Amino acid sequence: MKRWAALLALAAMIAGIFTGMARAADLELAAPSSILMERATGEVLYEDNADERLRPASVTKVMTLLLVMEALEDGRIGWDDMVTTSAAAAGKGGSQIYLEENEQLPLTEMLKSVVVSSANDCACALAEHVAGSEAAFVQRMNERAQELGMVNTHFVNCTGLDDGADAGEHLTTARDIAIMSRELLGHEKIKEYTTIWMDTVRDGQFGLSNTNKLVRFYDGTTGLKTGYTSSAGYCLSASAERGGMELIAVVMHCKTSPDRFESAKALLNYGFANYAIVDPMENVTLEAVPVVLGTRDVVQVEASGAGTVLLDKALAGAVTCTAELDESVQAPVQKGQRLGTLRVEAGGKVLREIELVAAEAVPALGFFDIWKQMLGTVCMAG
Image (tube, rainbow, N blue to C red; front, side, top):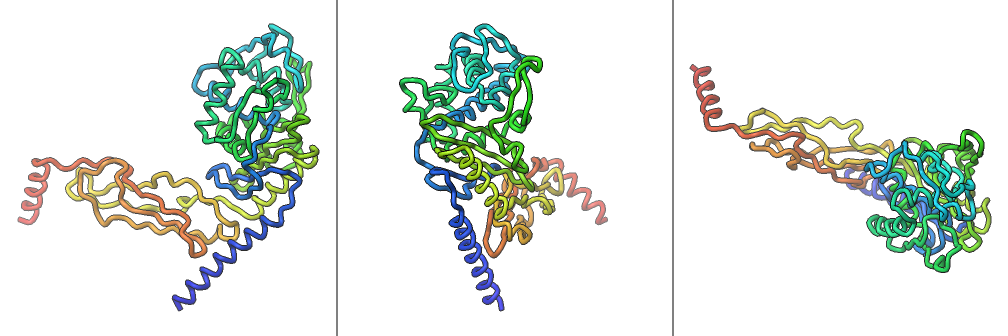
């Protein structure tokens, strides 16, 4: 019976793998290059030509926004800052809110204009506010790309415009865009801007309308950024969250704007229909481990870097967790000391093994403490 049970579990797992492959094969996208990534784990659920280096147009601004958010978080710039427009920023073409040289706007309005309406003049003004010049900011963009493992990316400006002599060197890939999009979405406050459909700046005098139509027409959309130039085609990094799972769909070099939105929607629909995120620790209670010769009798246990697990949606309700803990541990016990393993399984497959560690330090008893304990035991026996 055990053999039959194991064979059935194996058959189910293999069937699930092939079913997933078949579902992915059924995707027919107009996008020449695409990828679908789950945000929490960074796992890729689908990809097609995801490493071809292409022009990203204004999807470039995902990195621009990431550096602005990081500068805000570490205090180099402030949310209450006023940003001054340079001649270079005012001279940017393409999408803009028509800033004039020396015009000042609150940083929040500049940020909103970049996110919602892809304003190139505001992107340049913010870059100069963070780094002093666009050139210095672009250098940091490339450094940050390398830090994130975006090995096929090179930026030459902070906007994605193709108006410079070196525009042909401004290249990235669908995979690298997904990586930087994932990093940006880790800054929850950016979603206060990326989910705006319509708004205004300059005391209501200038209207903004989101270039990402999914914000209005796709349930759960959290962002993120569109892009278009004649050489880049229509590009999009789209993110959406449902049922506690957030997905990032990147499409590049589409022929039309409907192509990019429909391709992104198809990727997101595929991900939400077939995958789920579970927290393996949600219903797990870990017992304390007895401590020998410690100042406390037991040490509490916690999971080290448990995180979430991505799996086939059909298996989401079949996840089991088995904890294997040491019978006891001798003091001194260090905080973070390994005490066992939590095995997470579903469909006969081990999804993850999580290290179980001491949640606290437990010092060893001193000589006189041990003598007192022994004396107490003898007296009680008498």
